[in-house]
Length: 397
Image: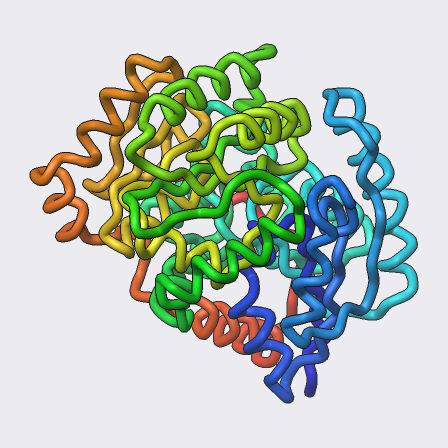
């Protein structure tokens, strides 16, 4: 019996996490894979990153264009509406046993609603986590309640999903896909990375080339979506600090398609053209991004990669503001406020010999790197050895 399973990806970061799972499922004769690409992948603004998926050799079953050409709150809601309409049509065309959804994006919630109405069991990755500064917090827990199977990244998060009323027999601690990528990806040498960054810079037509012989930081900053109009000010505070550290280079990847993301990216482009030590990239892809972290002095910003992937490299993280507030942290994380004084102090701490030693010797709380294998094993076990009953009972503690 083959299991027909759909995997949906809407952003480059999402795809980078899902890539090892997609590969395992696509090569397993027990599965028929429907890979759906949507959201920012199909946008010129965000680099047409669906091409990276095709270059990796994966067959895309469907490209579903849903993104509005704006990042206002109203446009986000309209995108969610378009997503439900488009995926409802897609689900009517396909007969599938399950769908895998990762995380907490607004598009993902809309896909989950359409899948629920089509009575397709949802396998949810990364439930139970908390990010108190973003709308992702509520979205993530909503997707949990719509889902049938739950794959969490730590045991604490597993307990939280059960606390939301999900039966423990359907909740599994499998670790984080990001750690799997760190431990099993063949990374570039520093010279290879510098050459590839030069090629991208020339292709995108901006600024000076990255000099990786100097200390450098990897920077990603996303809007804090539960705050009102703070994105531009916070990014300017961050950029003012980066510019002041002329002894360092900074590899900056652009924000995602959240409300306020385009305004952040416009600022990044403007500063990148003006200051020689700032290098702004639309997308680096998985191997270049992880290779950049591997050799960097620190990761800076408010992306989950600073919380999940960076500790596995033994690299310090300067985590800015409240976007990741509530997540489990390794000892290599330095939290700071989103103002220049606090960011600068955190960066100086990250560069200190004492803290570098702490980061180098810290243990990641997000598993041992065998996440995809565990996910596949549980899906096989559930869908081949037992009947799926979508009439869930609320599990009381």
